[in-house]
Length: 180
Image 1 (cartoon, helix red, strand yellow):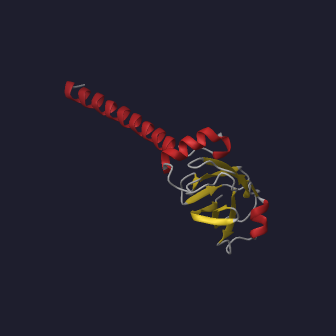
Image 2 (cartoon, helix red, strand yellow):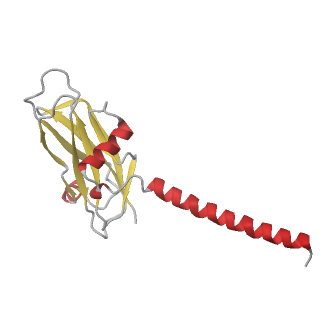
Image 3 (tube, one colour):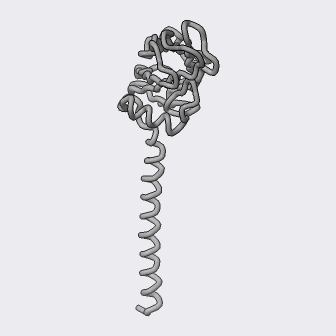
């Protein structure tokens, strides 16, 4: 075999090995990025607070995590999203009670109704209680859609109230898409 041919085949092997290494590293990087929004079910409130502060800062009255427009969930697998409520109200709020509630809509193309959606959600509303000025509380809404439900998409809105009345900028929303 000629020396030039030998150098060419070694160079080709080196390029293939480097290309495969880069491909594997790229796949690991993509997986890390997409799994960066960890499963909310497994996160504690401190982890959620840290993650949400890095995404939103502290200037939103209500924020949802994961920070996606469409939260994709597979029926039969547990899921959750977090609701962060921050007291941005001016004046004395030391005695007032905060609460939140979720509403669902745009589920017309689903083969189930609003009542079933709420049956498959835990923590979809509740009284939070008092929140110190500039303080925050994080609540989890657990989602458990059974296997076999129709695959569809619907919108979830979270509305935050103070003393029973909606607060300014106290709404957030996301779509939940059930995918197979």
